[in-house]
Amino acid sequence: MQVTDYLAQNNRKKIMFVFGTRPEVSKLAPVIFEARKEPSLETIIVSTGQHREMLDQMLKIFNINPDIDLAIMEERQSLSSITVKIIERIEPVLLEYEPDMVVVQGDTSSAFLASLVSFYNKIPVAHVEAGLRSFDIYNPFPEEANRRFISIISSLNLAPTRKAKENLLREGIKEESIIVTGNTIVDAVYWIAKDIPEISADKKIILVTAHRRENWGEPMRELSLAIKELVEEFPDVVFIVPLHKNPIVREIFNEILSDTERVELLEPLDYPSLIRVMKSAYLILTDSGGIQEEAPTFGKPVLVLRETTERPEGIEKGVSRLIGMHKETIIESVRELLTDQTLYTSMGKAGNPYGDGRAGERTIKAIMHFFGMCDRPDEFEA
Image 1 (cartoon, rainbow, N blue to C red):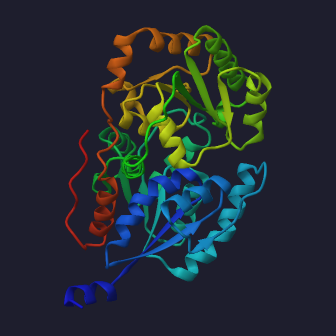
Image 2: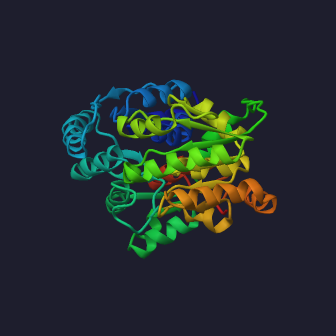
C-alpha cells in the first residue's frame, strides 16, 4: 500500500447520503459512484423509504444497497406524518454513525428533514441541486419551501447552473459555499442511455407524465381531456402515459382515458424503460423537474405542465415551453409542434443547458475541497 493511500484511509471522512424517492437515487447515484472511488471517503447510505416500490427499482438499477432503511412509507401518508417519522428515525442514525457530512439532493421531505436534523446536531450539509427557485412558495408544493430551507442550513451548496447560483447569492448565501457542478441527472442519463435502443414505432410517440400535488384534481382532468381530443385529431400519434402510484392521479386518467384508442396507460416504468421511451418520443409533456433536465439530452421538445418552473434555463434556451394545465393551451401547444416543423426542429436542436456528464465528479471534488483534501473544482459552464 502506498503511503498516501494509507494516510487517506486512516483519515477518512464519513459521508452520509440520505434519500427517499426515485429521482433522488438517480441524481445521487453518480455522486455515490465518484465517492466510492476516493480512498479518503467512507460512504454511508440511508434510505428513508419515502417512496417504496419506485425507489427500490432505482436502487436495483444502480446497484446501490442502503446501509440503513428507515422504512417510513405508508399509503396516503400526509406531509405531517412523513415529517414526524423521518425526524424520529433519522436522528438515532446520525448519533450512531457520526458522519462528517450529510449529502442530500433536491427538495423532497427526506432531503429537507435530513438537513434539519443534521443542522440540529451541527453536522455539515451538502445540498446537491441547490438554488432552484420558482419564487412561488406553494408551487411546486411543498418542494419550493423545502429547497429554500435547505439552502439556509447547508454548508455546501452545489448549484447545477449559473442561474441557480445567482438565486442563492440574491438570498444572501455566501459565495464561497456555492460551486456550480452541472446537474447530476445528465451523468445518470448518459450512463443508462448508451446501450438502450429506440422503440421501433409507426406512429409519433408522445410521452406524458403528471403527478405533482398542485396538478391533482381539475388540472389533471383538463390534461386527460386534452389528450382525448388530440388523439382524435391526429391519427398518427400514440400517447404513452406511465401512471404514478398515487390513487388520486390514477383515478382521473383511468376514468377519462382507459378506453381511448392509442392512449397507453401503463404502470410506472423503471428508469431504463422511461429513458427508452424518452429517447424514442417525438415530444414530451411533463410536470416532472427531472424530465425537463433529461429530455434535452435526446433533443426532445418538452412542454412543461406547470404554471411556474424552477428550471428556467430550458425555457430560455428554447428546449422547453411552459404551458400550464389548461385543456385548450395543451391542445394548441401540441398541435403546433405536430404541424410546425421549423419550431419542432429549433427546440430539438437547442442542446442541454443542464449538464455535461461531469457533475458527479465535480460534486465529490467540492466535498473534498470543503475538507481541505483537494483544490476547488472547475465549474460547469452551459
